[in-house]
Image (cartoon, rainbow over all chains, first blue to last red; front, side, top):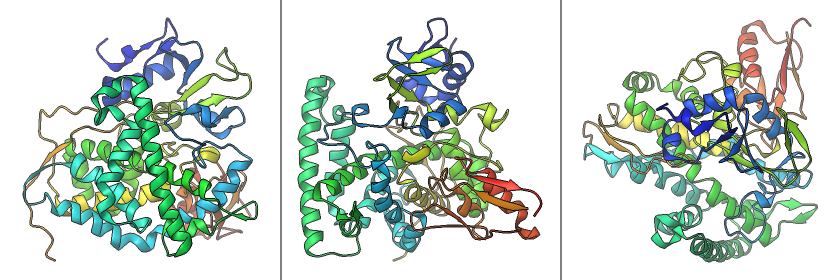
Length: 410
Length: 66
């Protein structure tokens, strides 16, 4: 077998999703998982399970009382649970009630011109060149620039934010010695302290002088009839930085890589920008950038004849669910911007449904609209080899070539 | 044709009001509220049905008849 299906071993009921090859071409891997081992063990570890069928994935996401999202699922140096991700119902709903209104679709619409401006500022830096690394020059800085804008923080904090985010998520990127897990842990804890200190100052400032930024609005939120504490706001800030940036980067990477290699699909969006929102949903589905989310078993549960015990880890493979033919039909693995029904789970589902999904969609749509308007003939150079990272599918370098275009006339 | 919303299932994906804003709206938290609670006008029926079909939580169902 030369496809990524070989990373699934039905005879051992085991699988390994953490490989660059799987991340680059996950669909054969997903198909093999769903078809042959609907519950697999991660690398034959007895207490780490992979689930992949649409109905199983949806069930796990909708039942946090069995498949919990609580803190033990992820240790990235944080002191306390990431809010609201690592708190399950019933407490979870208290946080979402404060945060959801600030993250609703309605809330972002008035920011359209500002975000369009941020995209165009970035495109201006390479449009005359005829080539770019769209990962480094657009998809990485954009979500961070939008976050700074939402928080009314100066854009010159961008490089610092990006460095912090990398040091938490992939410390080895800037620190070669972080391949040692102990060193990585130290870097994460040090970085987490720096992030807490930074946001601590921002929160103190916003309490003293409230404005119309995200933190000022959260500062007025009430949990159990009491104003949100600094700690609670810090924990949310931490999650924003970690959950909100890489995910949008990877979605743009996966989408632009596909479109840059499929000029007929790219041309559909150039010819009719009103198709961009549907294209965003379809690319989220087929190229699900966050391949899996992690859950911890809270109560004994049996799935496909395998007993899940409390404390077991479950990798909920949302990418596999999103390409399941039982839900999406025979063309599940193909991109179709006209797909009439698309109940993809790229933003998860159930009570922990991605808090930032409306912001993400808003950024994704604007970024793709502007990219196609400004550089309509962009493509990935033939022969370019793209390296996808497993887990969250970023593309380390994403070269594009296009007819050079002038900067915006300002 | 009518739309029935199971508000307990809705978690605010917002697919419905993105696809058929004439029929579905968002409350302050971004959860679905029906703008059309009775018979859906014929000209909106297809749109209303497509949007209901796209709910990832299956919180919306279409009931034929009055």
